View 1 (cartoon, rainbow, N blue to C red):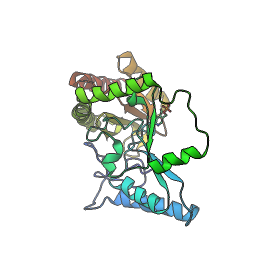
View 2 (view 1 turned 60 degrees about the vertical axis):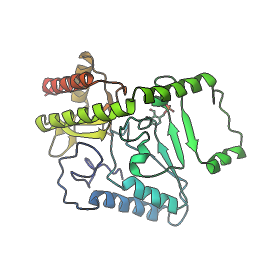
View 3 (view 1 turned 30 degrees about the vertical axis):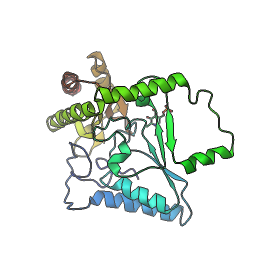
Length: 282
Ligand SMILES: Cc1ncc(COP(=O)(O)O)c(C=O)c1O
């Protein structure tokens, strides 16, 4: 079950590591109850389907990207990681969207979950537009690749590697991780204010410059905004000069993952256009 604390059957207003929470009611004290329920559900899934057999691997983004910027309840990933490891599995972190400082507090998204994965996959931000990807893993897993022929025409390409190294230098020199945290938090809080004014915005979530805004047709039932109205909203933003991604199971989540060098003025412009789009389509 997707541990989505906004849309899922369990969730409250203190579940996620974000400056903006859901409007759902929550009475948790120490441990996030929604998180515990989703972990129990994961364990039950394994018990029924795998039994005592080994798991090959568990694969997750540190915050779901195209899935609609879904953040896991606190401690969920750590607890699932421990279950997977206990049952012989490898834990794979897909850092294609969450890596390279985008989430602000950490360079890698998995750090926010307090785990060290066995395999980390990287792309997109690693090359800042240049086609580049990488996989990091343990010596043990890497060794397994020597058992059969594994070949990449462009693997280790020196031009790509130079781009990758330069991107790392620039992230550090221009303090882009810090900028992601500062501008991302500001943008999240401003979007959070919009949520309380505009019923079309059901949820605002994320961390740093990995932001999701879920559009709904009814705030109470959290019913997704219908695709035609979403498209109108989206096209309106585009016409105003704001390009946003789209995601979520029902394609009703604005995925805001801008370049990590954006400014406060860019954030203000984003909020202004989203507000205007909401008023325009409603
Ligand atoms: C989270 C995530 N993982 C993996 C991929 C695939 O990356 P690539 O196209 O570089 O193989 C994408 C691409 O959209 C992605 O968003």
